Length: 270
Ligand SMILES: C[S@@+](CC[C@H](N)C(=O)[O-])C[C@H]1O[C@@H](n2cnc3c(N)ncnc32)[C@H](O)[C@@H]1O
Image (cartoon, rainbow, N blue to C red; front, side, top):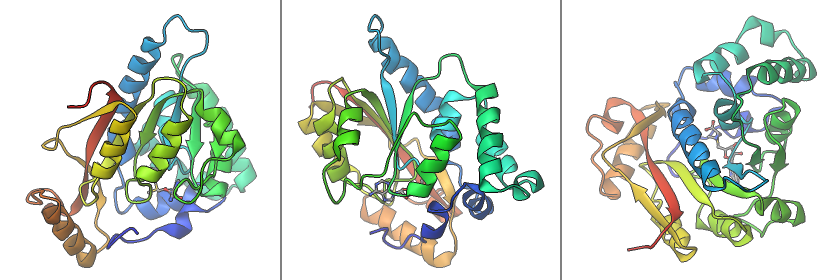
């Protein structure tokens, strides 16, 4: 399903984020850093749309893992600081329970006044559980919407959602997940997704269109995601990008996966 991309399944299901950051540091995984200002802007604009309503829209981060996008959205913190924190000797000496308590205090102290509630969806139960313990998520769901419709808890939560965000998940979730989410929505939902150029997002774009969402994308503006693990992975990526009509020169050919940003909002679909 992830094609020729290297797999990192083991670091997605640890009791805390230390292995995730330690393994991804040498690969310079950076897409949440690029998403941070975009998601902050989208969240603010989406919240402004609901001015006057008593309940603010909730952000649903799909493939949320340990709550990294929630951390960057709602707290005065950078991805570089998170790498430093979770690979530090101090963190290395702690139990998971101690780390979660240390994080809870840290994030509470960095909370931004304009913070919005964030729900997380990820099939990795230990990761979303950690994110909740650390105070990053207001709701955590492990439904696999590629396989089955949402359970009652997620179904009920979807009625609050006004913005869906995605980084690092475009190879894992398809139009099935987005259709299930939109089926349950009761408020206008916007979708902001950073998707690798090795993956076609067209099926999602078409599905979102059936829910009245119009997607915009600037294919010339790309965002580096991470370095390739090896030459084999780079060859796969270059070929996949070419197959989808992209030009890998200066991007994947230079050694990194690149994403484009897809923005979907209610509007007439041309
Ligand atoms: C590369 S990580 C991205 C984590 C985070 N968004 C980031 O950018 O740092 C991909 C995540 O997708 C999750 N995932 C895989 N299949 C999924 C599915 N069907 N539904 C939801 N999450 C899924 C994995 O468990 C993993 O946590």
